[in-house]
Length: 157
Image (cartoon, rainbow, N blue to C red; front, side, top):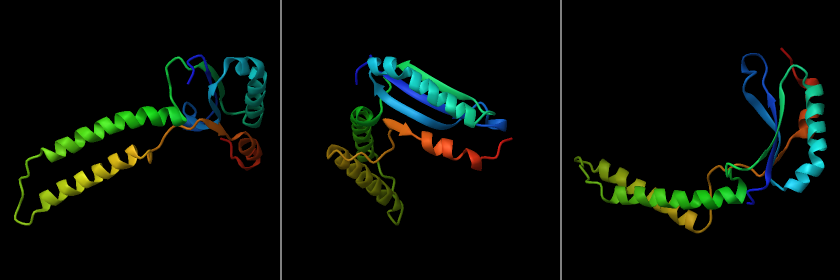
């Protein structure tokens, strides 16, 4: 991820009581080079204008920002998050192993702790193998055609 790359996003806001909240992200592009942004800015402004014409009672927002905050998506996010998850899960496992068990007559407390340790150990092993099962931000979203084609089915306030 180059810190001089840009994020491009087209948001469609809701109507009525939800007019201040983003209802849908129509277009999103992560890690877009500066020269491409400079060359194709007119296209993104045109797409935002088409969406505004299709949804005249809604706010359409075009965001073209440099990725100065270090926002991560896709593989970059997975690499960074895997490291922090492994560190956290190893701490949770160590805490579960060092927990004093105040067991009752039927041993339910020790069963809970053992199942928790097994779950954490399974998640650690899958992360070490490179299997990331949690949600992560996408690199690319393109709903332009779906959004423009669905305007005749929309009920405006």
